[in-house]
Length: 138
Image 1 (cartoon, helix red, strand yellow):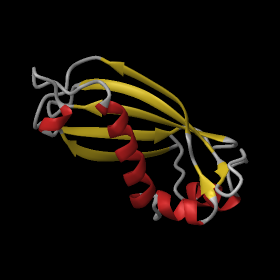
Image 2 (image 1 turned 135 degrees about the vertical axis):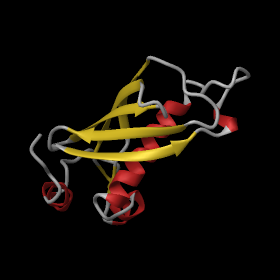
Image 3 (image 1 turned 60 degrees about the vertical axis):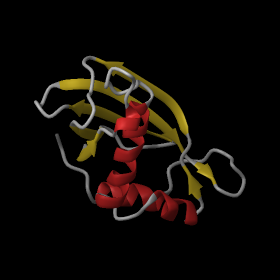
Image 4 (image 1 turned 90 degrees about the vertical axis):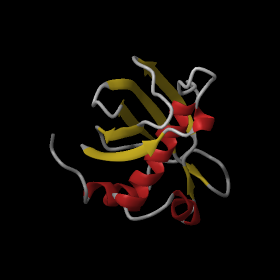
């Protein structure tokens, strides 16, 4: 298992007329957490992954809303990888508000494709090694 936490401040533009985060923004929070996870934990950006010839498109998204997030709250997005990837990688998310209340859970499944052909492939060995170096038993 690999876990990482990312802080995200709710901007005014993320909210609706009631000051509540619009549901579509949670998917953006997932993406921000994935990007920071890759940069902070794995030491590379998605741009570097693509320079190495791999793209990781979203195949599935699931999101469950329990409580609203509000304008100007500082949210904590916890991202977890529970199993080593093969042809897909699954990220699990928990979002908590400033009171440490669980407000959202979700998952995204990303595939691996070759940048040049856009054809599916297995997770590259160098990516697996990068994850294995950071793997912890739960």
